[in-house]
Image (cartoon, rainbow, N blue to C red; front, side, top):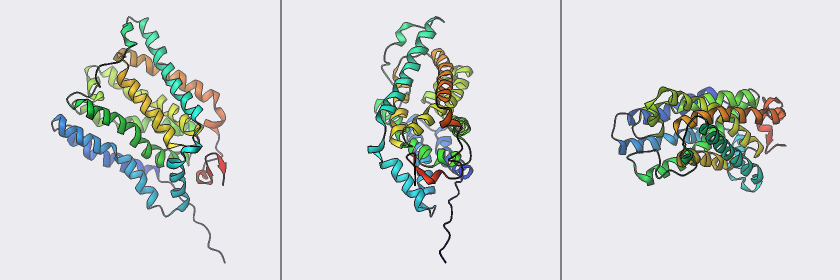
Length: 282
């Protein structure tokens, strides 16, 4: 008698509890210390989702899950580069349209330029550059290594994108209280803070789209996330224009969903996500 294969059960609730916990135990103390040590604590906290994701996979006892993570990380040759460049172009267009629209509301045309510094004050250009780069790269190991699949195992990609976008935004919450962060700089106006958290929802849809059209490639999401972070940091958009940008992102996300209805609303993968890798049956 052959032993029946045990199906792996994703644990998204436990993942988010651990990801939040092991991030916030570093970020919350960073609120109460000087900017230098606070920056170090913030960087350590950024690694938490990736570490939690990797641990979940390694202790899962599921060889398929481990192979799937390896394929997503190391499958560079399978990345659809045209799709990645297309996604980058979409976000660049979102930025351009947002600035053009903001001119109608009296915002300066000088927004079509680069900023001299990063928004991270008091930590130095080197640390700011490292923070933005690490946030773009290492976060995606956590969010795409386990997190998004763990949600997608139980629902279609539309609702997965909505839920992920909300939880991803809220994960950043302590940063608004850490001196010198981009998020803390938004505290001058509650509207800017609200806009930051809302903006994560349409971005959740867009980056899920990048993930899926790139055959669930973590590298593709790293590149896109890095581009988004640098555009948000180095293009001289005003906070008011970033509110406009959120509206444009919502419209862009809606167009992406409408153009990819099959992708976002199919349920073929629900309950059997590990049975497909890079869009092919296994």
